[in-house]
Image (cartoon, rainbow, N blue to C red):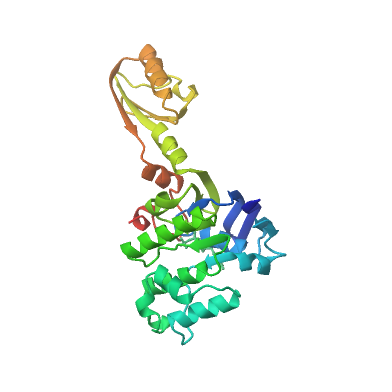
Length: 311
Ligand SMILES: Nc1ncnc2c1ncn2[C@@H]1O[C@H](COP(=O)(O)OP(=O)(O)OP(=O)(O)O)[C@@H](O)[C@H]1O
């Protein structure tokens, strides 16, 4: 049984296609990082998984059940860290957690969970007075109640200090080792890289890549840009037609070739050398960071640039 399966999942808000024909399967026990810049459609997807909003088209299955017909049964076995949890009631951290434990009819020890997220010393303070990072820790502890089969975490490291991020990673790894499926969204590549088995990259509502970090790294490693300086303008050489070549451009007497396959580089050089006088060759490989930026280039008009959000 897949932990999450979406088919043709689409959500429109007026003219905005927040999620566009999403087909995604997350297997049980996976740690899946859901990456994308602001406005990519990550939170909308999470809201669809939990039946907080209804799809315009398509279907969602969570833990083998249809999200629309079985939302209560699903939520019973899912731990959720939503974006921007509000602690508006006059309750302490321990009281909030005890309430969550009662609601799920679980038998967790509130103090153990508070300790796990580094809030043991602040258990008796009002949660509304907590700092942003402390509230995020408490929201994470609430998500962990009743050892859920699936953890859905929306931007879990928001507001956390480095120590909090490390604790979060440790708990995610520990829960995953115990069989929990973890689906978490982020716009920070390094955060996802550190804990995920696989990642999905969203951009403007579309899933533009799904792979393991290793697989993505290989794609990035295989990607290269060749610059061939020629004795005369290298036009009409037919390089575009070669296998593994994604595109070419000519800048003065330099032919720039975008290769998606490392083996294409030799073919390109041989091909050009047979048709023009090559004076110099430079090759630039593409980093994982650049690949991610390329995949999410542009983003939505209302989103901040990727460079800015990746700090
Ligand atoms: N309730 C809504 N009404 C109208 N538009 C919405 C609504 N919810 C989301 N959107 C739009 O859908 C798009 C995707 O938003 P979403 O919140 O899913 O992105 P995200 O990837 O979670 O972004 P972020 O990283 O900023 O949280 C955006 O253009 C957003 O403005």
